Image (tube, rainbow, N blue to C red; front, side, top):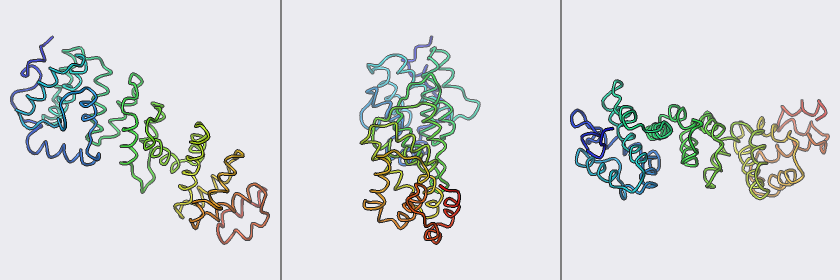
Amino acid sequence: MLDFSQFSNAFPTDGPNPYDQNGVRAIETYRKGFDGTLFIDRVLRALGIGQGKTYPPRGDNGLRSLHKQIIESKVTLYHKLSVLYYLLLDFDCTFGTQSQLAQALADESSLPQKYQILMRGLWHMDHKEFKFALEHLTHPSLPSEFADEIIIALVRHADADAHDYSLPLAYYYATQPIFKTAEALELFFGALAQTSVTEALVFARSFPQHAQHRLFEQLLASVIADSRSASTRGKELASQPLTGNEEKWFTDYLGSGEGRKSKNAKMVLQVRQIVTGRDRKPAALESLLPQTARIANTGW
């Protein structure tokens, strides 16, 4: 096994440097897209390597300094090799498709596959290559490292106009992480609510009552926020068999709570009245929601 504590054994000493002025500028652009924090920043911080903005190193001297900090850190050998592996992925990207520097290090050092998969996945996340990232980060051998941050990034970079949240949903269903932050939970639930009202309702029911109440109101807010989808999504939610608590939350939020401010609240409430049989006057609703006339005729 090569001694990777020697700089020349860890990195190529000739050829293009991924941390030249242009390379550093590109990395900083990616960082801005993630609100100032890359996933490699989180890794370095978790391992106690460097202080402040350690990555990207500036030029050859900066890389040598970072290599020294990695080698002298108090973490395990595999953690040190994992960081070197990530940095060599930068070199592979700069050198071109034939470059296999990161893989060569992994093979020479017998770096376990799970470390390779994790670091490659995080590297793709940092480069906004989300589909490639998920091919690695959903691997069953991995713990749900940085799950909240991954969900947040995937939701914020989804195509909101097209309501395409397939990637954050795929990551969640593949890894089943336990959310640690309210921000990640709310963003994920918002994505789920935009995708499937029924699945969002089932998801909300998996939480204790106080959290379920908050999520249910978030679902209602999502349904009535957009007039273009309020008819279809409102009908979907109003047609669900609700629990006693959910029925009360539904009526309170849309009838007298925060939701009453929306012009779509009355429409969704009336659909619910028809569905539950509390309103036998579907004609009065037709001007608001023509589609619901068919509901009344089926006896819902």
